[in-house]
Image (tube, rainbow over all chains, first blue to last red; front, side, top):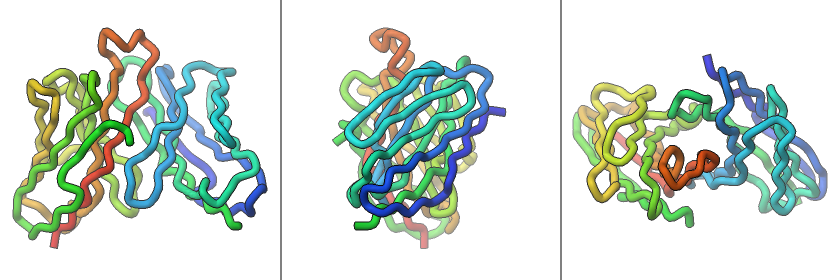
Length: 110
Length: 119
């Protein structure tokens, strides 16, 4: 069964303290892995798509990487405005469904 | 702004009632997806439409139904509402699987959501 697990569930960082969020996935064949940011009560905001192992994408303080079993979202020198829930999702080959993890709640303290 | 619009923003109704949530996808996107997000759960996929046809179903209750119209907007109908149906309902759209996608554009863009409260 296709599955996505994110860790940790919650993370508190001091401003400037870099860290990584993990997304482990099990799919029969990966069509794409997606990272989203979600603020409370708002719709998820698309960040990155990764298609194959070894691929990396970068945007401001965020960098996403992909292996055959997991993806990492690296946050470098975070700021309080980076506080949000970060969601990971996958779409498997041969299906139209997207499977979301339960997210990592990130809090960056000033 | 993702380009996906949803109405209404908030909906408060009583148990047993029926409501309709509306979604307009981004210009050019043929696929529309509906998700439910409760406080204690992540995003639960409900149903997907592609160019007017149902394409995939998730954990959608029989009391719920959806459709996509010729202008590509979609409606999610929730009937015989229960307290447990209170949640955020999101619509997402994508160019995935359409001829213009070129095989590598599977990301979804989400609307702002409709917060449903059943009392």
